[in-house]
Amino acid sequence: MAYSGYLQAAVLLLAVQLLCLGAADADQETGTVIPAESRPCVDCHAFEFMQRALQDLKKTAFNLDARTETLVLRAERRALCDCMPTNSLR
Image (cartoon, rainbow, N blue to C red; front, top):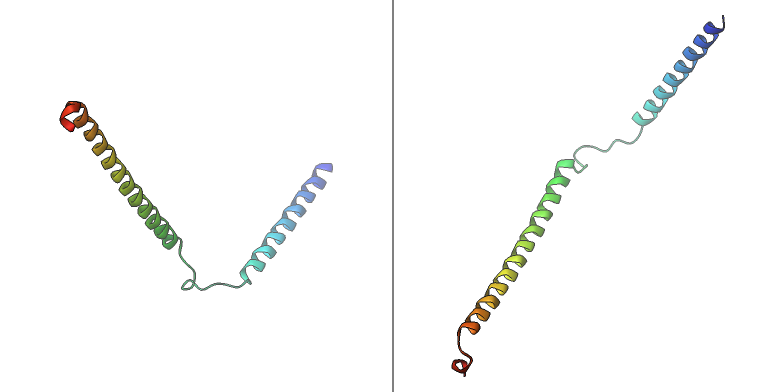
């Protein structure tokens, strides 16, 4: 007998949960819907993000290239100065 009471209570709780979920879904459906044409799509945001990332990478590559060129010139100058005798530079 006690088992059937627990079973009835469980079925009742399940029914109440289903009713609550159905009411929550109905509330969400009656909200304002933004048309797809005016919503920015996820792909557009991803594309813009990737474009900005690519621009940042290009700037970084340019800065690294310029820095590398400066360091190479500095190293060549040092090597040239080390090879030449000091008195020939005057």
